[in-house]
Amino acid sequence: MPKVILVKARTLWGFSIKYPTQTAMQDSIPLPPPTTVLGALATQYARYNKLPETLKIGTKLYSSAVKLLLDKIIKYCTSGLKYSSAIKYSDISRSIMLIYQRYKEPKFHFAAQSTSKVYTLMPESPLLLICVTEDPYAELIYKLAWGISSVGSKEGLVSVTDVALHDLKVVSKKVVDTYFITPSNIAECVKNCIEVELCGLAPESYLADAVCKSTRFLIPVRGDIKNLFGGSMRVNVADNAVVTEIPLDDKEYTYIVLPKEVIS
Image 1 (tube, rainbow, N blue to C red):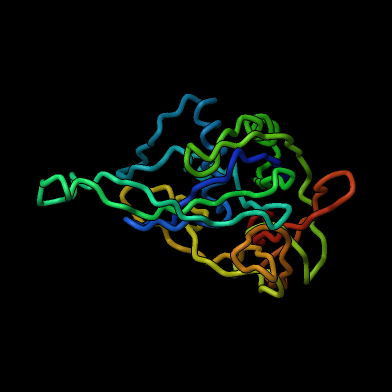
Image 2: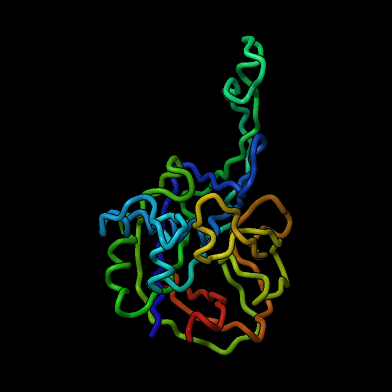
């Protein structure tokens, strides 16, 4: 029986997670995508198992995070924020351009570039990280989740305040309110969501020297302020999905929409 691990973390200021293939002007993904959630956990898994930063599998080079997928330890990941409290902001950074320039005069050495970050505005709105694992690995992943120290870039420091382990309880619902990023091929937006392209949670997303295959996801936004991310969104659940219910705290339950293959 699969288990659901819910991690609550407090951000120091926010996080920075870039869309793939960007160069000079870098936009930030509004909430940690599934691949980033897996990466945050994989850092602790690699330390525990003394894994190198990269692994060669056959003739291909991967991030060691791929072990969690290939060994079927983690079956699904997602994230959310309890309240709409994340906003993107671009800082102007002075970047060294000398190594990219044909001309070496001093006026070509530097350039101003816009680098986006996501700032979380409410300390009382925890970052919610979800991992679905199989029962034999549940206790190990539960313990390792307490060690998550950053999400996205290494500067995106977080402090884990709570980790909970739950059975994956499937409920029969066709419309749900959820805090969590959801693949758009298993749910349809009803209210308070936008659709973005992100890397899919697959081994190929951790392959060196390759661009990940993109998947479209629904991300919660505040209905009246479209650039304020997080909180709850309402979705129609597709036939190829299941809904699981877990307690968010002593008073509230929350729902997660999962692909059916996660529980098979």
